[in-house]
Every structure is written in C-alpha cells, then in structure tokens.
Image 1 (cartoon, rainbow, N blue to C red):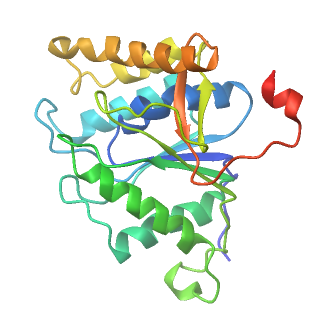
Image 2: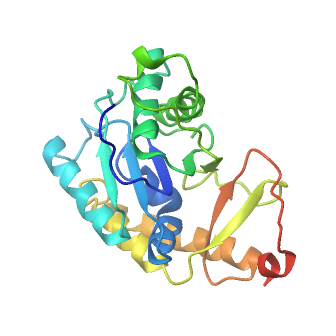
Length: 241
C-alpha cells in the first residue's frame, strides 16, 4: 500500500482556480486560523481564459491565493476547462484525491450558474459522485490500491455574483467570516488576470454579499454554506452562542 500524506480536515472543490475563493474563501481562511488542515482541489486550470497569457500565470495566482488563505494543500487536476463533463474518469480522478487526503468534510459547488460557466454544474456532479466512489469497497483495481475513505460530511457553497440564494432552508447556515473578509478579498485579488481594474466592482459585490449574509446571522460578514441534510446539535448553548 502506498504511503499517504497527512490527512486534511476539509477539502473544497472548484471547477476553476478562483471558484473556491469566491464561494467559500473566508470560511477556509477561518478554518485554517482555527487550526484545521484545509485543502483546495481545482478540477481544471481554468485555461484558456481571455486575459491570462497561459496556465503558468493562472496557477501562480492560485498558489498565491492559497497562501493568503492559509490553505495547506492545493492541487489542480488535469481535466479540461470549458469541456468539463461529469464522466466516469473524472469521478475516479477526484475520488482518488479524497482517498489520498482522507477529509472529514468536502465542500463543493451548490448549483448551476446561469450566464456563467457550465463547468460549475458539471463540477458539482463530479464532486457528489467522487464522494460516493471514495467509500466503495471491492474496487481496489480502479483506485491504485488507495484505501477506502468515507467522507463524513458533504457541504455545498453557492457560486454566482448575482444569483445568490437567500438563507432560508433548514440545511442552510452562515459561517462567520468577519475577521477573514479582507483575507478573502485579497485572495480573489490575487487573480489579476481574471479581475483587472475594469472588474473592480466584483470586490464590492463580494463585500456586499458577505455583509448581507453576516447580518442575517448577527455577524459583520458571513458566507452561506448548504448541507444536503438537516443539521443537528449536541450542545445547544454552544451552537447558539
């Protein structure tokens, strides 16, 4: 059996570099500050893209953003940007990552993003399937002998600057990113090829959304995270206060 790296507590998955930063970067920065081991997996390198000279530049932006957030591991998979589809090979590729890093929690993209990349919806389906594949036994030949791993919790982050859902369902909750909002913004700013001066309004959109979500939960700033199941609490007072 191959030697495994140190396990991660949380892995967030995006279709492209910058998806995770936009959707849940503040949450990841907060978790890292709290002592949890955090990873980001980008399914593609996001290239080609209009203003980037090439994948090397985009990957360096991703590295810088991860450093700003305090992320412990960031990997970019060799799946095709613009042609990303939920298929067997993509599912197994991501499931191998989960088996290797053994996360307790995986956070993926929540839904379709109208007028934006269809890769986001495909990434959601790939992530859902890979979590399932990660725990399947009697399939060693498909996973290079990597041990079976069960992801304990699956969560989603909404992605979209103008289609963000209101926090109203039972499985919706807000993470407090009050102390990490500007860290999140700096991580997104690291993508200079994606957000040049002409798109500076994006940062105000992100701040406005974060303040809106925060206000809904009594925080200065927050991010919406979605659980596919109703969440229960063992210590009500700790959860409330």
